[in-house]
Image 1 (tube, rainbow, N blue to C red):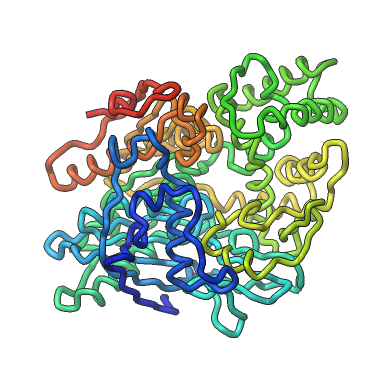
Image 2 (image 1 turned 180 degrees about the vertical axis):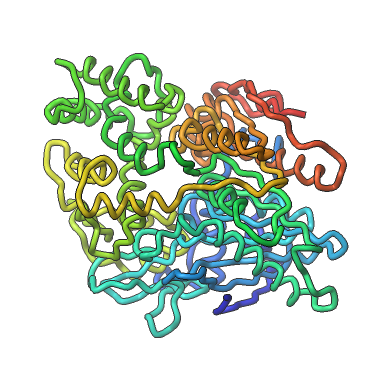
Length: 576
């Protein structure tokens, strides 16, 4: 089940949580440098990957409260066990990693198992599971759940080795694409041909199994470590939250003791899947955000520059017969009404301005169309590819320095880290509109490709958690990327209708991205999600120890901290 096993030691100036960066290093505005940008070492890549993943998930900005009001960044020495794992029927492996602290408590055997948020690399849940579990003496098991940053440069014929640096196919890679394409970039989430989301639960289970195997190796005198004698708590946020909920439904051995899922991307029968609402948002939300009823919007960078393009989108939608109205105001009202009538809240739409501004909707839709349809590189049904781009957005070959940094810097879905989206349907004046219409038709239209994509989406429908398994779901009510109306709310309702014990915290004034709370307007309006995840983990752990009850359902009335104000506990109002 596991191969390419590696064991590394991390002590002194190279700990498990920060690779020696500590809190100050993680808060530094620039990434740790490579001595040779074209040939970074495995240690340099690991350090930079930890820096990138911490900053992508946690709010480390001054006044944000991390390490003072909630959470902490400890120096935790220990060992890392890494391997590739393969679920039955898959063609590509997923990475698994187990961090075993030197202070692991053999007398109180504890594993925290997690999955990366978004499509991030194997360290993509370090700020979620690692930050909570490692200082408590628990081992922490991770999976990239079939996504991650094992990019493959088709021009150069180079991909990522287990330890990160680029190498050829003959050197043993973490992802080797099955494709005849010879230019651009292939990456696992889009091009594995496996639809990994359908196997998220099994990815999490295999990570937990690898944890037991690693603990047997780390402490042979205390072996065997089994699910019967080792506590296993699963936690994740975003896609990682969806993954741990999918793990909850697996039949067989009682291998999980509790689950905490934050802002989970989860789809139940009858609810809107991500591909449906993301393709709708990609088309309509730029125009809808011009409706004065949604003002004032939070201000991500470049909002002022983007507003004329949003008005252009209104005109394009009108010409295509997708909105009504004789002017921009009326067209924005029409787009807003369509989104609201399909389940979007105004709070989610306002927070969604960030996903519009950073082109997140298109990035998600392009990648997920490929993965749901199991298309290889160069086969995208709407003609999209991925490559390094020239200034005029035409594709070019990646440089050695760009390629060397992918494993550490990328988020697992382009654009980013020097890889962009190549759109073959670009047409002015609204350059991306034709491609977005094609993506939307894969959900709402007909044809072989639409049927292929929808068949993949049907395969990700969640089931029920195991009877008797404690499950806590936490979701910000202002989430503009994974709105709770389409995900957590129907999941909780479905589970409770079947008699499952699922507790639900709904948190006001919390959106999806803690990592963007460093933007002043977002810091003033929104609160972080991570403190509620940590608090729920504390409560669940105490419950398993027989010292506390499970968290009760709550709609948590928080208080935004406002401009130029540091976060304190009163803003969070975490239930006691």
